[in-house]
Length: 234
Ligand SMILES: Nc1ncnc2c1ncn2[C@@H]1O[C@H](COP(=O)(O)OP(=O)(O)O)[C@@H](O)[C@H]1O
Ligand SMILES: [Mg+2]
Image 1 (cartoon, rainbow, N blue to C red):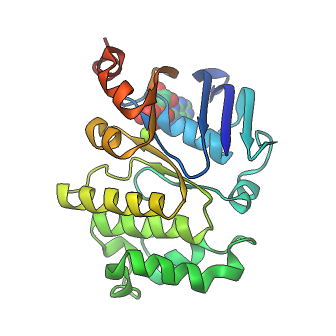
Image 2: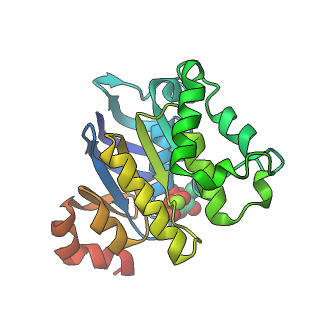
């Protein structure tokens, strides 16, 4: 479904990602691991069309989307749930969710999508008129995830969904990710939580200072000494 081919990208002409290649198959749950500053969010933003590529190709369902605008990529189903949730704090839960589904491909399915989101997160259903900024971190993550689903994600990219959440919420969010995976959604999961990601993902990539250091099935990545080294920065 997604093929990143030899992508170099960064800021102000200085590369952060160097010759990164990875694939995500239809229905796969792929983990993207790496320490702080490895370039994980940069890669997600490159895929979203927020950070331009310096070289390389991004194929989504066979089409090179590297030059496509960010809104058009959302229309195509390439959707990210950003690091730090970034909900609109002054807007209600309902407004946040509905805003997620305003793009042209998602809008016709908004009521069905909302039903799906509320079935995953019944807790949001009880808080529809509450301002999102007054929710707990875990509830805000539900809103952010829900908003991504409302956008009609076909490739859902989650940027550190467990960051700053209590262990109970982390378990819950991973349970939701498993559920979406079981429903057939294609997911690229960015995480620093090595153990949990290796447990849930089909395959993983480890980014180390902008380069793919390790890749493969979860158990292979787990047993590769370079994985630990990438985290410890050795
Ligand atoms: N908007 C930006 N402008 C300049 N440099 C940036 C910007 N965003 C991130 N970087 C730099 O890119 C590198 C990778 O950051 P990031 O992709 O956020 O890593 P990660 O998500 O793995 O923690 C870091 O050195 C960071 O300082
Ligand atoms: Mg990040």
